Amino acid sequence: MKRTSDAIRHGLSPLPAAKNTKISPKKLRDGLSTLGNLWSKGVLPRELRGHFLLTWFAIERGRTMRLAKSTGFHRNTLTIQLTEYTWKLCYKLRTYWFGINKKFPSKPFPDQFFLFLKKTLPNTSLTLTDNRHLIDLWLMGFPERILRVHYILWAYKQGQTRQVLCNNLGISLRTLLRISSIYSKKGSPAYKWLGPMKITKQGFYPPKAKYNHQTF
Image (cartoon, rainbow, N blue to C red; front, side, top):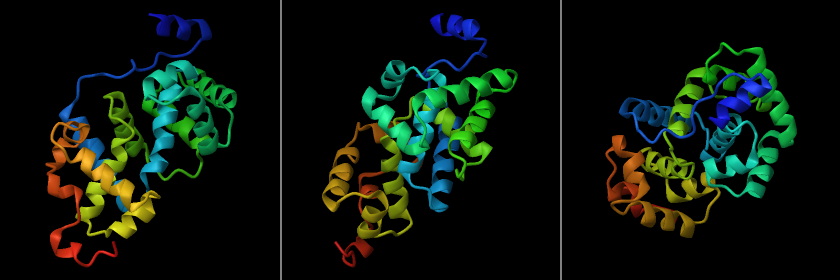
């Protein structure tokens, strides 16, 4: 109720409700397919973190305390990361978002947000369709940390070595092995969110035929 009254008071159009706990199989498949296509184009998980944070920034109307609750990030971390991704302070981002929200009240949220995204990250390679599918993932509660897990599974399927994978993700071999160990266990969040990929424990490690030729 407070979200709606805030919108009316500021003359803003309504926004999606935060996190719909019901997972749509179709939207999940579309979202995972979009991630795979983006990885194929050279987009990396850390680049999509900006989209994730800005989506929740828009939904929470720039209120960092609510944003911290929605994303699981510390408030100070959010402020720093948003500035690093956009080179703009939070008050400036709020000004941009409120302006777009008021100017195009009849546009659906994904379309409004895409204008906001192009304004704040003008060099983004995301299309409007990519944008919509990613927003659907975030609204279902898809955790940002699972982006890296999806990338690891995708990379091994493409035949990438551990060295290339570590370089792309900017992590050490030890971190890569720890991620694989944690998320390959049955009951981990990976099995909930990446189910359509029909993941197995073996998928978290290089194929045996190529393992012996790994640089490490």
